Image 1 (tube, rainbow, N blue to C red):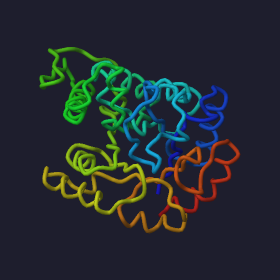
Image 2 (cartoon, rainbow, N blue to C red):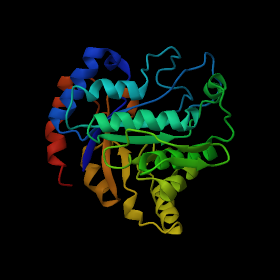
Image 3 (cartoon, rainbow, N blue to C red):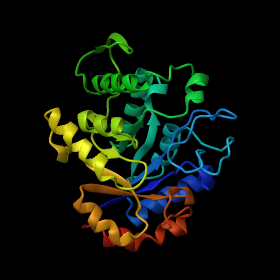
Image 4 (tube, one colour):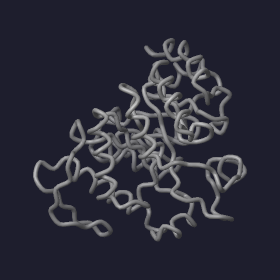
Length: 290
């Protein structure tokens, strides 16, 4: 079992020194990855319903939260770590230009020695899409095309081109390319559409809460339907309330457990300081062979 530290670019760890300290502590404790979250802006008085909490509001309900750009945050901690993987959980892909985003991600991956995992999602905050100037209604289709276009840009040995309905460009060179020829794309979300997208084109699936068997089954069904081996789409899940449930998760196909760096993670096991992260070393080591 692998362990990731979730919500890294929130709370006290938005401060530069704290970001470095907790990333280095996670690496020392044996965490495999550190994960950021994404909102470009949070519109004041938004009415969209946050789908991952009973209140319908993000976090503690504050709209003016400090939330550094996930890719820039990852670049900051990449420079002070050597092994830990750098992941988005998630990047709201349809809000971003896929050509520019592919360049940024490939650059970070190449400079960090191939340590980037791209967790993606379609987004839920319609007012944020309005502020950015991107249509909300076609975000699923736009996400699929963005993924396809970025993979073309990352893997083309010559000039890359892509001609979709929403993303379209003639032959271009996008250099550098990722260290290992591409970047793993882990599909996040807690919907049937997200599970099917993961099975169809993802390198993993990350539901927002728990370990939902119905969504796992959908991932496997979609993978088989598209001629893929379901085992090629491993699962990442939130830290269970009882750590003794981790072996059972492994038997379900879970590859990675995410420990939140704030109480917003919905579990009693969380770590927001370097000392709290280091205190989890035994937990990480005990389940490393699970």
